[in-house]
Image (cartoon, rainbow, N blue to C red; front, side, top):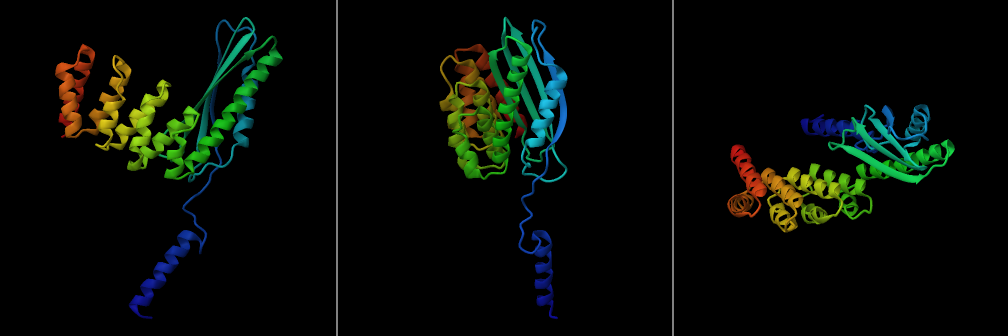
Length: 272
């Protein structure tokens, strides 16, 4: 056998091992395990589900979840639930965090469900409704994690904030620079957590083309929008960011913004 033929054979063997002779193993799926479950009720709540009921509902929900698009070992889902009730009106807040996903970004979800609860049975029903809504949310986030850059960009327009936030994180983590303008549109979202996620994503991506997008996103006399943009610009750096921060450090009408801009400039200079 010639050396050229030997090399080709070695390449073929290697590809066959990696792809199992035609079956693409680059995308794997793993079962999600139940992680830590916490449950609490407010002091004023009188009609509430019991902790074992919540734990059982979450464990069964996790068992129903589809496989997660990742590699072994299996990730685990930490869940916290808070139940509130006053005068027969109840509310449940459930937050989750998928640990060990390997996605490179936090995968988090939160649901809030309100309803009238005249008795314990209806309180349990409200809790179960919250768990059902959480399952729907997690299924959509799992699909998003297994998606493409095109799907992530499309998900920025989702009606669900959890999907928008995860899509922005995935685009930034994978350096999809064509998404700068699309992510920038979320900076004006009235939901603070979505706007914050967009600014963080642009800062993580580190593209100087995001600086004018951040500048345009600032709202007059809206300190939070200015803080978001300035912090992101400080992480991105570049001449345009530096020029803008120098201007606001000296001439902004708000002393807090002036001080924030000076601090951002100092951090940029230390990174050089």
